[in-house]
Image (tube, rainbow, N blue to C red; front, side):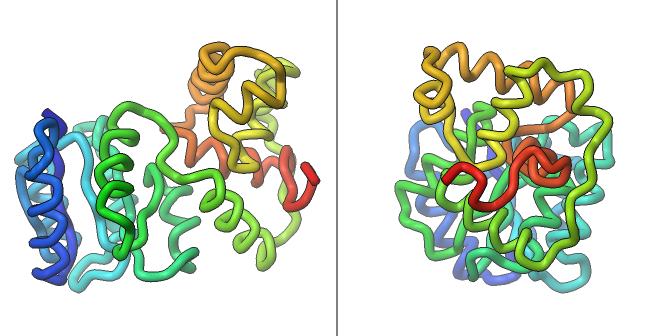
Amino acid sequence: MIRVLLADDQLLVRAGFRALLDAQPDIEVVGEAADGEEALLALRDLCPDTVLMDIRMPVLDGLAATRQITEDPRLSAVKVVMLTTSEPDEYVFEAIRCGASGFLLKDTEPEELVRAVRAVVEGDALLSPGATRRLIAEFAARSKEPVADGALAALTEREREVTALVGHGMSNEEVARRLVVSPLTAKTHVSRTMVKLGARDRAQLAVLAYESGLVRPGWLG
């Protein structure tokens, strides 16, 4: 069973998500929280696989809570999925940089929510390619020039290429087609690259790709 914690200050939002997720045979909502502090307490007590975390909450917001989650070794296995009402939210990119595995709009389609929960727990891409591209483009439009990251020196040429493609928002299947390799080979390259760069997931890998200068908006054409 996939164990999920819901953290949102709106009771109706939590109730709707709980009803949808609990109806799935492989997903169980193990707890709820109305603010970031409650979420942290519940996470340490319940040890869920993932938390759906609202960005804007009283007492402790989702961004601050995410920082504490990713800095706590006891919670290293927990995947954080940010919930937002707008796309892209001004805090979403910062949340991903802090360790969140991706984001979902609160009005997302039910099947997309269920798919996302399963995907993030399995370590696959949560952000859709389109959402990743929009997120990076929005961030790039108001950011300074990226600075080359020395950590990339550990990557092979193929791994650098794969990192750039992930940064552009490509799925494993799209990477495979671009490089003319199998999806399994593409997934292996992505996994090895994440290990070398210390990225928790594809979302952080996309951030690293942009911040290191490997990818720039519009470079792929």
